[in-house]
Image 1 (cartoon, rainbow, N blue to C red):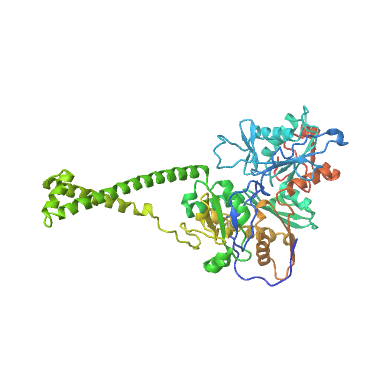
Image 2: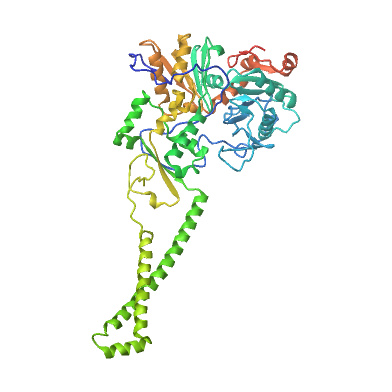
Length: 562
């Protein structure tokens, strides 16, 4: 928890970009986290596992044994919009399955990368967090129930499913039809993923402002007297996906030779580990990079491994160069013999005015006449001159100039160094510099105009809600993977302090685990009998009221009229 002490109002305008008012709608969860700021870090490419990686079924493929429980525990499914699906039993402390909800044919693609070419026709059941493809969702549910070890004809477990704020009745109807009619579940409870995370962290407040920034959207959700007010909520159409794409475009323009290796997954890894939010003012932090010493301290130097195709091409080029060197060596050897022969012919020609008898003996020894000697000297001299011109063209090839080391940030020709080592020491890696990109990527939430989205920024969205419900701003809760950047809470505190009256105290709470807390909140809802009974829809109620039924609870509200 971060507590803001009372203080004077900060001067200066808000850093958020102007634009149209953000509407209320669906969004996704997930997104990138942050890396350390203010230090020079040398990173080794793309690790195989970090805290954002999906967990496959081989990691948690434990079969469910019903005799271990008096009643079947609930199955909690956090769809995660379009980024990452998490599933497990409510009695678990961690989801057993974590994977990207991507389907090819009748199978789920684990750890799918958007730039991967081994998946020919990938599809996702969601679009901007809304369920639009029930067939694809059925494949994912088959994978989830199978991965949890359930092999019965029908699912005898209650199901808790997360959804986006203000989910449409059509999207919820598709999910209800699948769960009740295809799988025969006894009950289903729906809840907003951000509110699941809110109850999981047990925030001691009846009035709060929940800020959730995920993969595709960012939401501002006001909670008044313990009840979420959906018609005052705000949605920004920016999230972790837009930051990843923007970083990918920046690096491809900055380093054109790396455009084929700067995949979406690698750009996301760089974003999650090496970005940070400008603590106070974006422009002042941006201008600090104008100072070379400050830029050197705040920049990050990364080594990008070369692809197998690049290694093959370099090996071919190396073999071709070796072949050319051998050919030049043989040509130089012939040139030396040719020059020695020309020198002997000239020595014989110079004997004519000095010692005619010796000159005649040399001619007889060479088996030449005087005219033939003259022609031979001319021909060999022409061949030697032509060969010298050829060798002059390949002089740089034989003796390449030494490479100069440079520490200039942002240059494509930099031979970057770290701890006395240079890029020439390791031929399998390429080096890049991440400078102002470190603050530009997280800034898109506060200034959506940086990615071409004509909407208000997060600060303006908060101000539009706080203007109507000032009490909400006294307790601010942030969740979602796109809020894990370092200094995000500090920047948010600065923005809120400029919105509230002077000396107004407020608290900022951060989710303990912004990636998994939504799933844990769903498990907490399923474990609380009284809470689950108010939010769950039974099979009988579904058959009586239809697929659009929804129970109002602390984690959801039927905003749309049926």
